[in-house]
Length: 161
Image 1: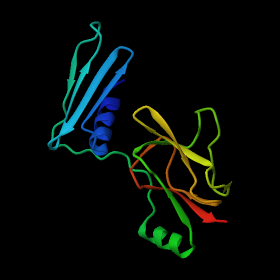
Image 2: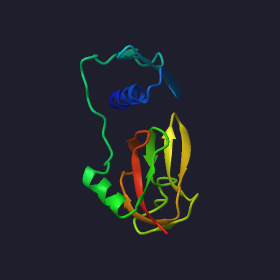
Image 3: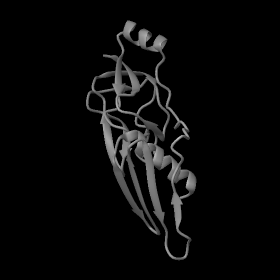
Image 4: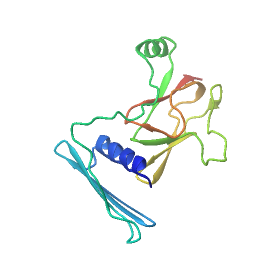
């Protein structure tokens, strides 16, 4: 895990509202604590590597990549066309495929049934299948594969059948 990945993890945890996250991987132990408007993390690596402390400045703000959300015009259009929006029930990283070497769950123009898996959202190493809430045709995909999503963020537009 490089410094950039650690910084992205810190930003993700800070945005999620979690007070503490511990991550242990082969050769790496990471604890991220948040609260009082600052983020603190300690990174410990094996003896072979020097110990590294990462503590971002509290005044420094680097926005995380934001997935495309519908604009006001798109929202109005979706409502006018009676489209249903499938939204994210949790925060995490959205994956449109069940595995890197597999095709996407759904594409624009595909028909979905209520309960069909449309994507996976990974949150804290747990993979949550997100199912369609309505039967119909996928009109628009609003997020890219492997991008962070927020709670309530629109993911797909569906034309009900």
